[in-house]
Length: 157
Image (cartoon, rainbow, N blue to C red; front, side, top):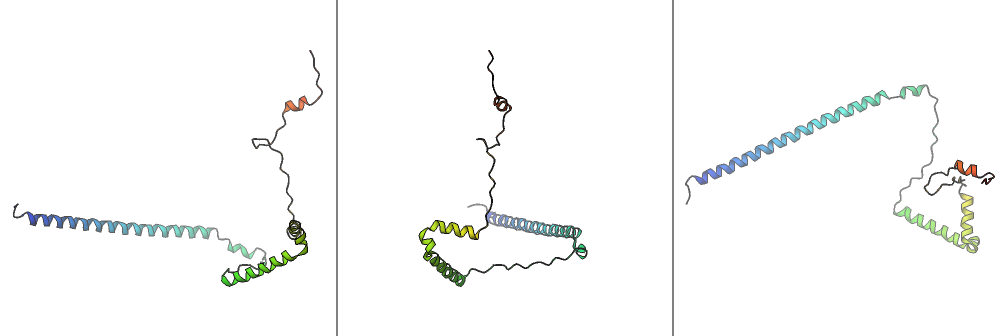
C-alpha cells in the first residue's frame, strides 16, 4: 500500500511547485511593469526633444516684419448629409431632372443638349497632342542612315 509518508511528501511537492509558479509570475509582473515605466520615460524624452526642435524652428518673431495679408474667407459648403437634407436634395434633383426632360431642346436631341450645356458651364481645357512614340514607348529617333538615304542615289557598278 505504499510508504506511509508518501502522501505528505507529494503534497509538499505540489505546494513547492505552486510557490515556484507564484514567484515566477511575480517576477514577470515586476519585469513588465519595469519595462512599461522605461517606455514611458523614453516617450517623455522623445516629446521633449521634439518640442525643443519645434522651438528651434519657431519663426513667429518674424511676423512683425512681414506685411499682413488679409485672408479671404471662402464660404465652405460643408453641410451634414442627414436624413432631412437627403430628402430635400432628392426632391430638388428630381425637380431639376423633370425640367430637363421636359425641355424641347433635350427632347429633340439629348446628346447635343448635354454637350451644349457642358460647353457653356465647364471651362475648356486645351490638350496638347503628345509626340509620337514607337512600339516600346520611347520617343522616335531619326537615324542618320535614314537621313543620308533620303537624298538622290546613284548606282555605280
